[in-house]
Image 1 (cartoon, rainbow, N blue to C red):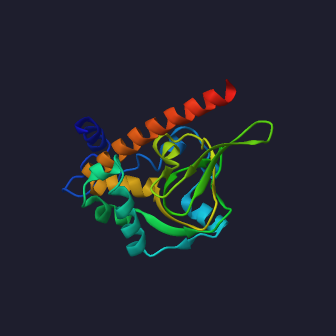
Image 2: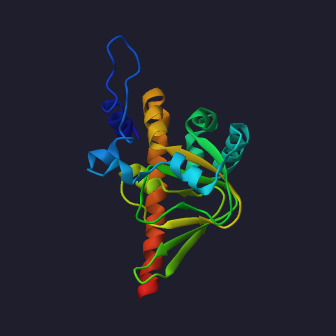
Image 3: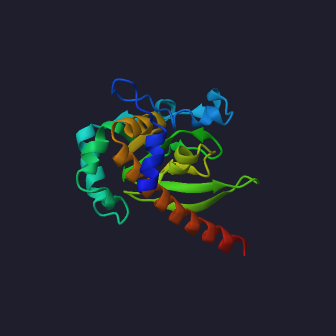
Length: 210
């Protein structure tokens, strides 16, 4: 964790006079890799497309606190983490039967499912969908693209009306500037959860082709 915190501090050099630096570690990652900005799908565009409605932050934060307090990984953030995280998240209600994340697109946000269920599928070249899993409250989706600026691995479709928490690249950069210790802890835990999930998915794909 100290190493990750050091990396974050290296990417946020101090401004003369003691002010907060401007940090663009995640929000510029796509363009730095030569990806056309018009190919990027930010949360604001997807929310408008799928008809998502704003959820009161008080309710969203309460749901997130309850779910993460029971999560073996995210509980390590500590009891005061969610109140500190609240200002960086957007909270929304997502209608049923909406593709909130689409495979092979570039997106710079992740989702925490608070209520409802979301299908996670892998579209096959011949047109079929391979069902990978069904996300339940507390599950995190889309963090891989947020962290590595790569294309989305799967399509995520709401199976019922869902309440979600959304963290975008710009908000994560702001967190790195204003609360670097919290950002370092969150990124480290997201990476651990992502690694574990990818191992499970890889095993399932291997079983499917065997």
